Every structure is written in C-alpha cells, then in structure tokens.
Amino acid sequence: MLFVADSPATPEELAQAIGVPTYEVEEGLEKLGGRYIHTSALQLVRIAGGYQICTKPEYAEIVTRFLRPQQQKLSRSLMEVLAVIAYKQPITIAEVDEVRGVESSYGVRQLVERRLACEVGRRSTPGRPVLYGTTQQFLHTFNLQSLDDLPRIMGDADIAEMVGQGVPPEQPALPEFSNPSLL
Image (tube, rainbow, N blue to C red; front, side):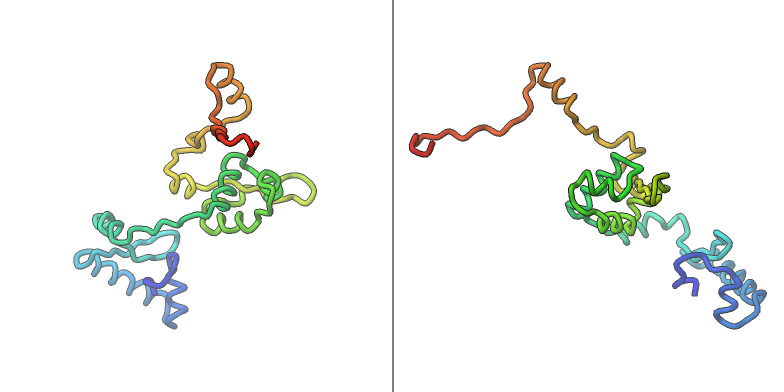
C-alpha cells in the first residue's frame, strides 16, 4: 500500500484499509523499516504524520538519471499567458484577457494544473476575482532564483532612449523595385 500511496500514509489509514488494529500496523512498519536499513536501496520514512517508502539519499543521482523527468513543452499561447502572469502578478483572468486580447481562462487553468501558476489571493473589488501569480515550480522550471531574474521588457522609454543615442531600432529593409510599373 505504501508503494501506491501518493502521499504519506498514516498507521490509522493503513490499519483501516487492511482491517487490523493500528498497533499491528505500527509493529509491521517498524519491522519493515528495520529490514530496509541494511538490505535495500529503499528506506521507510516518517513524514507529515505518515509513512512513505523512498529511495535512500545515496541513490538519488542514479534515480534522477534513470527517470530523466520529461520536459513538458508549453504551447505558444500558454507561454504568452504565463509571461503576462509573471510580469504583471498578481493579476486576474480578466486582466490577462485584456492584455492578450483573447479569452485566457483555459490557459490559466492549464498553468495551475502544471503548478507554474497558482491562486495568490482575491482582489478586493466587487465579485472578489481570483488573483494569480507564479510558483516556486515556475522559478525552478525556468532556472530563476527570483522574479527579479526575469528578462527586462523594453518599453517606449527604452526605445526613445536608444533613438536618442543614435541607435535606430531594428526595422526590416524595404524591398527594392526594379520594375517601375509595379509601383
């Protein structure tokens, strides 16, 4: 049961599932933990009020190499929604819609499911809309120490400053027409 549990299981939950007294489960867990100490790459740990089987720390690198967590690619629209949330947080879905010019609730839901964005509060306006922000998983995924590490976005003032320094903004070259009848 500990292998299939997605979170630490309490002795009471285990006892109820197999129909035995809690003290018997606790005795069994103690024996199992003792057996794992010397004969296995696994260990039984007590965490968050329950028990969980996990790999011993000395095998972490090997397990990571084997599992190679699969990269989840984000679609262009999800990246756009995520960028709006990251740069303008805390932000409501309606505000994301306004920035993007299209409906974004699906994108926000997807980002919440992927743990890149989360609910961070509610705006104190009528209807109390949910405010969204980025998560620690977002920082980890994009290898950022903090939101201060996000790339800077150039605004109008930045472009004006560049023009004032004699550096023209990049523009595509105009095509040259050799046939005047096309003009």
